[in-house]
Image 1 (cartoon, rainbow, N blue to C red):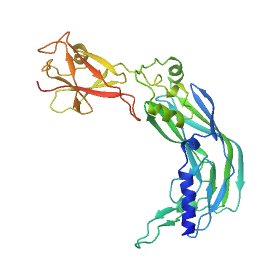
Image 2 (image 1 turned 135 degrees about the vertical axis):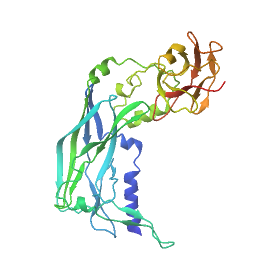
Image 3 (image 1 turned 120 degrees about the vertical axis):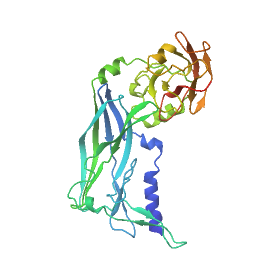
Image 4 (image 1 turned 90 degrees about the vertical axis):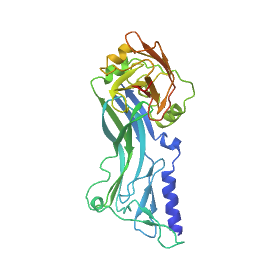
Length: 336
């Protein structure tokens, strides 16, 4: 039981790192240009903890790093770094190792699984089961000390999630290598990367401060002061950008209006007709706009058929989300 508690404490201490440690100084931004980003990583000395009564071998720990996440794989360490990147760019990662240290005759246990005991009142236990494919290979795991784990979008900012794994283990040779110092370079490919960095028109967001996601982003993104993190670098869109959709039922058309600007928006007859929608039955009274499933108030310039010279006005609310910097409205023909 004491061994289980001790191992659980080790694993929890590795997993429950504070945000300051995740964005700590062991990984530092050293250079940024329109087409590249350079990160320097310094790694402390590793520590080895006995796996416990249920398994032979050791679990590796490093300050500032968490336990590797895949059950059955060698119990190395990992941490992730988020880096803002140009929208739509193709990202290539290279690693330059400046210093490393090799350890021999190390038996690294696999990442354990916490298994509930089927006997009522009995304690849960850690189960150590090797991934046979990895443990029978005469090769280092992971095969590189860093890689791109994911590309995503966070509050209008495109990012690369970099997985840093400075401890590599060869289970056949029982050899362990710790990369003590490395440089990670991200290169951005795409015809518009350089031009976009210098000439992307700003997108105005009229919103109050402080913004909670800006605070989170500043704490978790390594190049949080980069122009890549600013809404000014998000691809500029017209205040009203629309396209035909079939999502609205019982209407001959539905137009998706995407906006990042809170305030009053104008939609003219010519805007709708230019999309090629069937508006033969559209009137000033049956033209509707919905947001988040609710109909919103609309100012109509006239009465009767919606025709040349007519327009509507509607108010777009400020929209704050962790995943998007834009709000979506639907314009369609309703009853009335």
